[in-house]
Length: 226
Ligand SMILES: Nc1ncnc2c1ncn2[C@@H]1O[C@H](COP(=O)(O)OP(=O)(O)O)[C@@H](O)[C@H]1O
Ligand SMILES: [Mg+2]
Image (cartoon, rainbow, N blue to C red; front, side):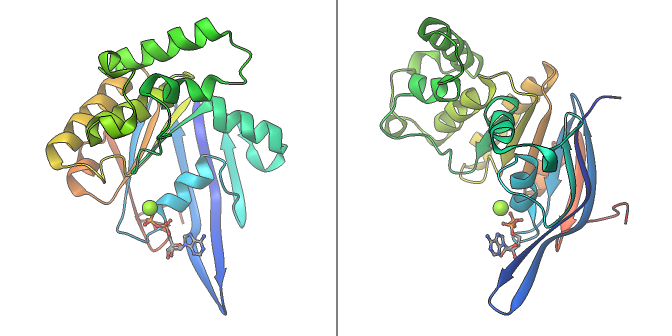
């Protein structure tokens, strides 16, 4: 058993004025290396909160998160930054590409400050763009690409560091059904190559396409451990 993610009795509360929003309420979840997990739930159910916690972009109010067996609560800010930059690849609904940079330079971004030479960074980024079928668009800026192409660039940027986990928060949410299905096909083939993938969605069809599906509602996993 090779557990890449372990959420152990995680809660995340937000204080808003006089009230407390329980975005996550005592959630436990384990993900094995090589799994393709879908997390499905309606808007406001806590999906993005969960992704932000797994991705070390946020810290829980209560509970422990282990990434590759390491308790993230005991890590320094620079160790957390290393996990975020090198061990996790993020894909977002709105792509989050840098508009000034062409596709190739967007994909190179996570490799900056890695100690890797310019030539190797470029080679790796070109390889990642080839992997997502966009090599011939590497000089295009985001505003010269379709939504589906932008998401492919974002996926190339997520895989360029060869991360342990790919986290995708509503990756098809800004795309039409056909384009969204093509993006799911790409995730499926990345999974077949051995990648660990966690996708969040509120869409039934996308959820059903995931080999393992967990449902979340009001900050709790349906049928969860407790
Ligand atoms: N930074 C925040 N401050 C206050 N409330 C928040 C914050 N982030 C999320 N929430 C609340 O937590 C709940 C879960 O939000 P979120 O995880 O974004 O849901 P989802 O991604 O499933 O739509 C919602 O009620 C949301 O309003
Ligand atoms: Mg969300």
